[in-house]
Image (cartoon, rainbow, N blue to C red):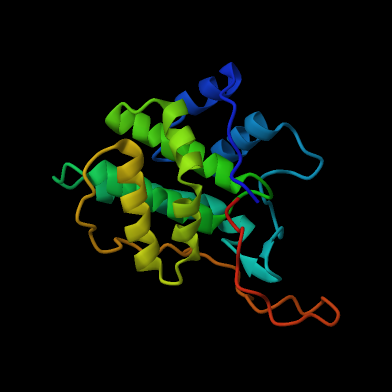
Length: 211
């Protein structure tokens, strides 16, 4: 499945520029998804007991804990950007994107909304045009997918930092250690293969979770 290109309509531009892109709330993610994808029969924001199922496994944060997840993510980004390092916004943008995708708040569009937020963070921190950043991420699809194919979260972070630096056309910094865990602070309790699936085999290696 190829990465989706995003059409930057006036309504979408208005929505993304009005947000605090470093302190996104679950309702912000829902509004972006609805503006990007249109209203859906199934709510785009997971609620109550709605679960993200990827490769027959529960994935992401428990829906009822999303507000706490996003509050934690905002605090983590403040800590990353409060350092004196000139590359702090780059590190924060890479971390935010990976953490957002692991929280997986939406029933659809997590990758597109996450990349849109990443592009807006790059615009505000580095003056990179939003459309050009999204286009570059699309051009680097192979490298983008390789980030999520890595089995170790520390390596995912290093690859994401390198990718964002190349998209921004800035020198690739020496990666800092992964500042915080990427996985949800409040994950689903049961991450075993869905037991209700009759005759289910062990789940395949997770692919396509972020697109």
